[in-house]
Image (cartoon, rainbow, N blue to C red):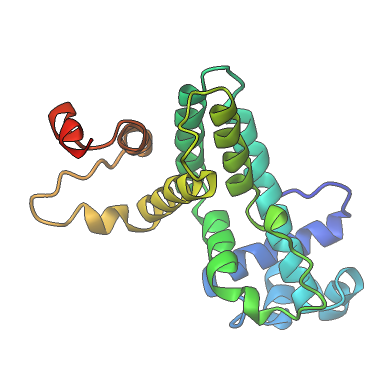
Length: 213
């Protein structure tokens, strides 16, 4: 995790904090533990960050930025929004599975621990906190404007299905693979391709679709 425009000392603290926050969560990690992991003094940490809350927010912002840069690079730019959506889903699930520490940190911060941070310190906006979600919503809206994705589809709902499915895959694929008679796709890209195909084309046969009309 490398943050722009930050000193080597502060970066050392951020790296240590990221590891501990990802492994143990915000509440369980102390400044003393971070100092020990970074091999610096507690005073050195407070030289760079006013509080544990501020350090935690800095770690989350840095993790989100790194994630967004990777997904943006891999998603590509193409007028075919079906291809873009598929590429995004593949890139996102690969990022989650290849970077479990960072992914767990961001997911935990988003879903579980935002309420533990002092409101005055927590200046994380929705864009900062999960910029990949907002980027996907923007991509879906562009696909709707290009008349390649249905106008009546709520972009945020579709983005939730894609992001949520990828997170579940990352967190539970080993467990789901153990379910009897369950041929679960263990390859991240295979999973993403199948998931996007279902979202784009549905699960009903043409005959069943006709019955619903």
